[in-house]
Length: 382
Length: 93
Image (cartoon, rainbow over all chains, first blue to last red; front, side, top):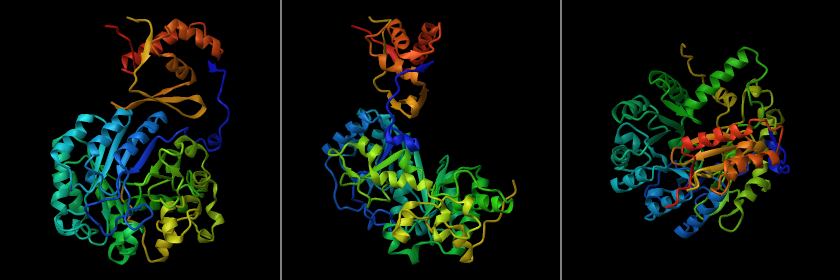
């Protein structure tokens, strides 16, 4: 049985893009009570020094309902710094969406956690934990933040709010990973946690020597995380950073040794799938492709039509169409034996490192890592 | 009481995706349910004003290659939605 009357072909069908974004990442505030030295937000184009009033966001949430958006992720800045956070969340719930929050954990109270639980729509609150003890966690986050962040997680747990943790790996905590895993998975009892490493974004650009892992430290982190992930039965995850790189690079090396023609979805700039399912909004209401590509302004909430931007904006299509660009066309990739096993990685890091979105990112380049003296992680027995 | 006129749960989101397929998303449970184009057509008629028989007629008028037992299919489909909390029947006081 088929429906006879089909809708007319839309531009979005050429790459099979959803009719509307499924989720929206919102920088709900530009303010934060901390200034972590590797924060991707501050000193980036996302840091616009402006917050919108509650009413503007509530009006926008109504548009998200009309677009059938299912989830918003509130970040910033520190979302819990907004006194009207419960009103914002009531607006999200009223408009049939679920939500998640990215937080430093220091401002979470029992009252707020109980409220979040009462909505029954909270996917998770992600708290940043960067150490097993104050000295490592606080090395770039500030004194007193460790106890507050851990207490934030325990407050969420006490109130039955799903708590997630992101560990950002840097030079001061790279030797603390085993203890961090023990703290989070055994003592605090989280089901899992995710990892990343401080990337060349925002404030990290000014503090890169202090913060970013050296080649040898990347190797150390990869081995430690792969081993811990195995020890804890896959309870450590990563979409970027040493764990993700370790897994991907082992696959790439295996494919190269076996002489495989390619790996699925590789050999082109396929490193980012976000613009196919989500979009972002800065704290001043400007719609952008991603909160790490906040210099690309697509429109403004409550003035421009979100669905129209999603389906038709030329800048958004340019980012989506990166996927069709062969890595072989880039001088940077010429002669690379991993070419057909590589995705070109994150466009935001390509932009901050090279000033070009349409380029492979050198940040997670395996060839570059090896040329700088890096070693692949030790292969673990199956 | 309109026992025979099903109503879509107003909390549930219909996300129309590729090729007129869709996903029903229940924000209270975070569960999603795939709908084929005919399911989408049925869902859109579940407004408390159409009986299942009305909906079957709409299917016959709008679809090709409609099977003989489409009425039973439609009844089962609506019953499945009701069972999963995605639809119900309006109860008047």
